[in-house]
Image (cartoon, rainbow, N blue to C red; front, side):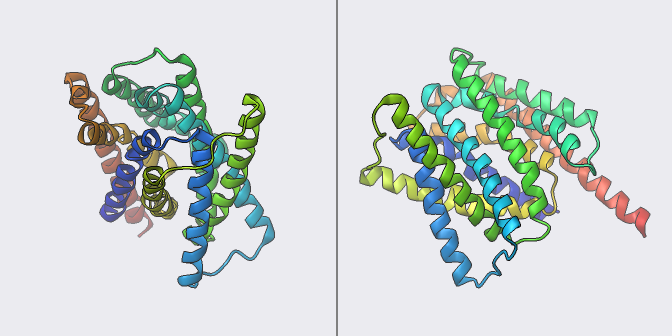
Length: 298
């Protein structure tokens, strides 16, 4: 269990770098997502071939994964759109609703999961903690609304995704879902072109290409595949609760790369401590509950 939680936090650290890379790459949101998921699909196809991983045989399963990948594409497109039209802080406040979304949606969709008041309470606490960390920046209402919607769609995607992990390899799942995300990102590019009466810029410089390669290799292919693998053993709520540490790591990266040390005021430390304590308490509770179940079964 300790190994799973260690891997989870490594994934969250990598995700914390995503918003920073999203700011550094000078591409429109759907174009950035299109390149991210398209190149990721290519890399995953190569990995599947090299590692000789068994392919998904059933056409219905492939289509379901691709369809869920469309949800992923919408989630990421809205996420980067919120970052572009607002800022990282506003986006993080909206994404902090993920735990709350999970506490509500997971019991509705997954029959084995009952509604738990302590998870709902922790989800609400996470929103307050993120507001403390980011300073409660509500100047970008549209960006905040988009990021909340992105969080809801991302939660729905994760809950559906947890069902695939029981039968298929995480690299295979990731591959088909990247294909679906590529389709929706391509449609978004066409839609943006029609809206602006001009096709978005598709070309990029060497700097953008380098940042994109980092985003694809570490923050997408590796982190995303490991996240899917963790869904085999950890609940969606557990993963999403730890996900709230992303803005903490993201702001640390912002300080390291952009010298934004002014972010680290008393409220930042207060919010960060609240999140760390909540994640630790929930982890201990889940571990204790798991041992209790094993003991009773024996």
